[in-house]
Length: 295
Image 1 (spheres, rainbow, N blue to C red):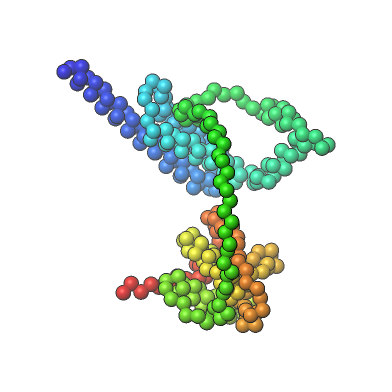
Image 2: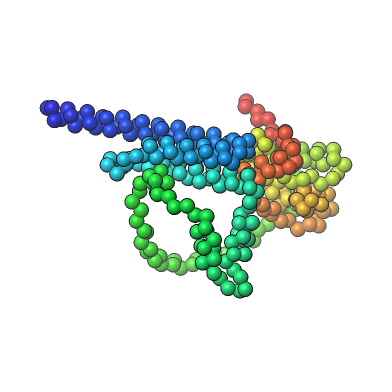
């Protein structure tokens, strides 16, 4: 009985310690997120000092992992903290030094490729001058036994030839009665664009200024999809403005008949949306969502 009680007590102590380590790692991840949010307002030294403090605390949390059993949640949190630390360091360097990925690649090309010859030793000798040897710590390498994946060749399946049906579009798509929530959203956006276009003396509207909603990225995505559909329907057209950025133009009835329809495609993510929201100083979105009748 005493032996069983001791084993149960020891197991409970281990579970309590695991829960404590997990909570500490979660707190460190939250601190990492706070540091990332304050990169623009802090100096580079302050951001790095905060990251070093997180690394030191993470080392203390995972210390002695060789002597205890592996916990999957603890591994996951430690790996996530490691990834976030690297991202914060990269963002701090990029924000404080204004070094872009293209500038970095160009610098490497200038060192490695000279006189039509490729010499990577030149880059290694340059890096060794500024390298500082340091011991690997537990926080920088997650305690996972990684084994190389065995490459299994896959047999290529026979390609099936499918015959696509000929696409046909209605001749008067703008006059058709659209029903449903999606159609109502398209009609609502088109009505707003017409009003904006007329209020601006029939001048083209900057594309990113039209679609961006700084408060709701999903609205920006929906606006982009609706604009893309309207361009495909030939109700709108896209062209480059004087600043090299795309702008939207409302097609007349003659242009609607004469122009060939096409699909507008562009890359859109949260960083791009924030960039153009600052560029155009957008406080409120140009396109408003239609009010939904809950009854």
